[in-house]
Structures are given as C-alpha cells and as structure tokens.
Image 1: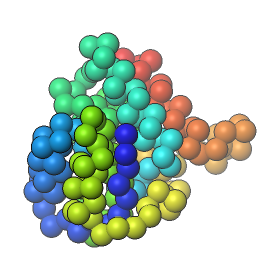
Image 2 (image 1 turned 120 degrees about the vertical axis):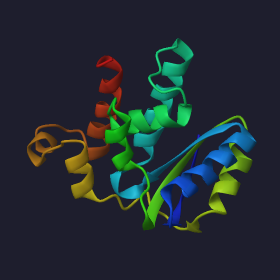
Image 3 (image 1 turned 45 degrees about the vertical axis):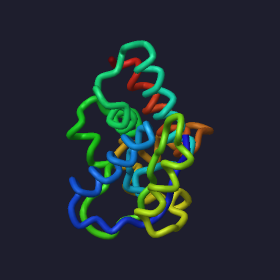
Length: 162
C-alpha cells in the first residue's frame, strides 16, 4: 500500500473519481481518495486496507470493487452512501489517496500527477474525526489509546458487525 498526499482541485467528483479509476485499471490497483480531514493517520488507512483485502480473500466482501471495500472499512460503515462522506467532494481539498496492488509504485506516481503535492496526514480535522466516528472526549479520556487507535478499533469492529 502506498499513500499519496496532496491537494486536489475537484470541479466534478465523478470525473475526478473516474480519472483515479482509470489509473487503477491501467496499473491493476485499487485506488481510493479520502478527504484528509477524516483520516486519523496512516495506521487508520493501513488497517482499512488490511481488513478490505482480508474480506476479499475470504469472500466476505460487501462491495464488488476493492477500492469501495477500502472506503467502507476506512469509514467504519457498511452503507456506501454513509461512507462516501469520507470521500472527496467538489472544490479544493486536502486529500489522501490509497494505492494498493502489484504495480502501486507507478500507479502512485500517476496519482501524484493529479494532485498538488503536500503533506495532509499530519493535519486531520479533529472535530470532523470525532463527529464522523462518534468519538467523545470522555471516551478518549477513559483510555490510554489515542484518537487513531480508537478509529482503528471502529475499522476492526466493522468486521465483527457483518
């Protein structure tokens, strides 16, 4: 798995997603873009990719497309329409793009050409993450885990909830 960070200027979401899909098809990789505000760190996306890949290996996947399965796990949701909130939207956005597959290096280079380079994983919107994953300050204070750990737990719980 490789992550590509940067800023995307999205005039049309379907066109942008289609462009990433074409790159994925060309390099036989799953490619999924996320609004960086909702990503609780690299470990969050690594966990989502691991769980999605495991679901496909076991034949327990919900989505037909591996990139969509990655989105579902990253969002900790079974409903695609709810998970899409974590995806890209129109406008200029900080994004993190997951590239996973055999030829992920050239695919990630092609994805990087679509973005304006920049580090985005270090600046999640804490309030957005708290709200999207239903994490409270009280929950965070009651454990030694950090926010990323709690979000990864939500990702893992999705497998149990099937």
